[in-house]
Amino acid sequence: MNHNQPYRDAFGQALLDELDTGDVFEITERDDGYISARPIHRYFAQYPHWSDLETAAIDLLRVLLPDPIEAGITGAAMV
Image 1: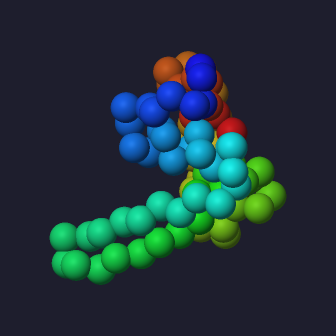
Image 2: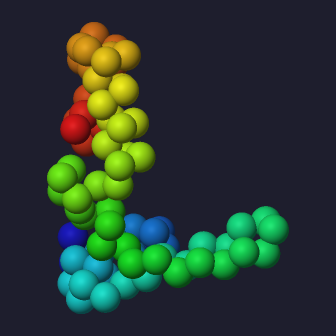
Image 3: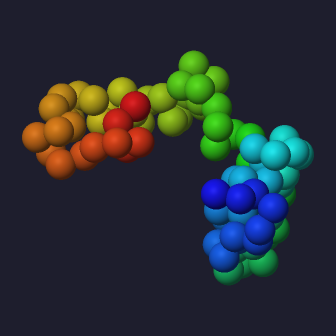
């Protein structure tokens, strides 16, 4: 994919921009009006750098679904 051409998906474009520049923020606005801006680089973090909550969720999933292939989970969903 040519990174110089605009991508039609805003989130996808933000991920590509993060790969190119490393200085991209995700801005989120909730229904209650709360707005936050967080760096996108967290989506590229390796497992040891994930939050305790994220690693606990994956560890629980590994207990509940010891065979992800049998459960129909493949590709990037498997950590």
